[in-house]
Amino acid sequence: MSKAREDTVKQVRTRPAAADVSVHRVFDHGCIWLLGEDAFTRAADLIADHERSYQPELVVGIARGGLPLARRVARQLGVETVEVAARHNASDAAYLQATGQVEWAEPAAHLPAAGARLLVVDDICGTGATLAAVTSLLTRCAPAMLRTAALCRNAATDGTAHVPDVWVWRLRDWVVFPWEPPPRDRSEPTAALTVPERLSVKEPQ
Image 1: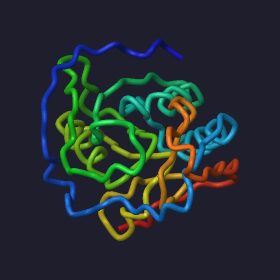
Image 2: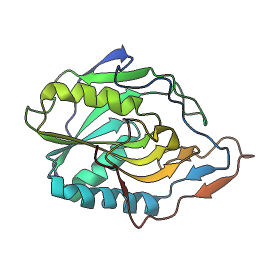
Image 3: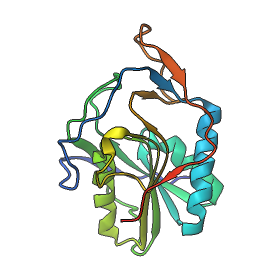
């Protein structure tokens, strides 16, 4: 795979009109889910295998959490990656609620060419606000295809327009990914996500 492109960015702040800011992440406080390397690798490969038939030409990783997934999926598909930095939470503390405000870094150059077939990936879709902001940016490029994938999605997105096209785990609690530090609150129970056998697909509208 070609080396991922390095993009110059400028900071902007937006409240995406496409995102429903009344949506709040669902937390049952049953446990903090831990995603291990084996489960992550299998999940990424399931996404790549499923999306292969759509023939994406570029995988767009939402930084920071979507970058490991983007790189793995792109490598499996033999295509390049591009990074778009977007952040919904002010910190990485567990159980933060959504604000509807997404800070994102708009690429000043190297946006995909018009007519490109794009796959946008992130680690988790909590309310859909981040995916909405990034896909809104990318629609300016008039892509021939724009699909979305996430490792996890929160149950808060049930029944909304912000469910990704494909995902692996639907959850009702916080998730810690392999590239993140372990939970600070040692009193909170933890459980490991199992290595998946299949992924889930959004129902056609």
